[in-house]
Image 1 (cartoon, rainbow, N blue to C red):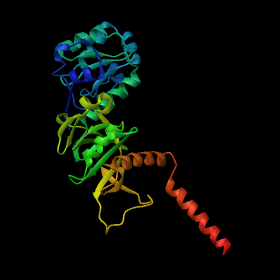
Image 2 (spheres, rainbow, N blue to C red):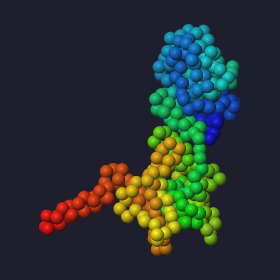
Image 3 (tube, rainbow, N blue to C red):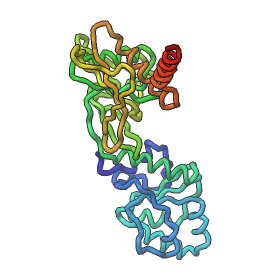
Image 4 (spheres, rainbow, N blue to C red):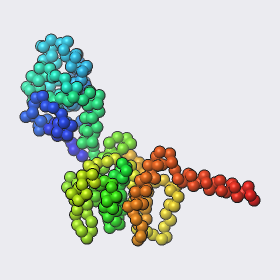
Length: 312
């Protein structure tokens, strides 16, 4: 988990414009994902001024400042320019008030801009900071994007996770992370997985070594991150264990506070795990859309039993 995000990184990743304070981009940091739209502050109410947040000015705020005298604008901007204020951000490509530039320069606060609408820009920055500042955990497994679904393949070491991921990549799916997956909770219903920087785009195949998936298969074979929709746990075949044959047993695994559906696939010589996992992802998507083959089978079975009972 990162304690802060530099304004320099924020500008680079979100392609923001720098109106002033370029020399202070590295030193200014954000520690909260919440955004402040300082409407009350512009009226002079500073009792609960959240100065440690990004200060976002939209059309409403900029229009309000135009009704103030230059002296009033400078006074308000100076009160808003606190040392730990990360930055001022102006949406819709609007011009920054001259008094804002002056007050920000006195304290070393960057003034940024974007052409995006205010609401969209606020949502974009909040989501970005949520992801950057969220608590992260490492999970052992391989994360693959299959038909747009993030599938986390888990299992004991040597069970064949990486080899299965390689076959899935050859079948047109995308690798996110191998061996170690960094996960964080994006919201109440979503967990996201990504690769640690040192392992990005790399896959370990026993007997071959480390391979660079993007170099061998192209940029379309990898992805930076994805939400985890399904966990597939690979287990060595145990003839004394009963495995689910109908798909009626539902299992979930908690990642942070989010329950993620989980299925167990037994590993046995001759089973094509890549195709099985691919079909598991397709079946999961079909179920989420309301098409459940298990229910169809149970309905057909019920009709057959009823039909046989009538004949008797």
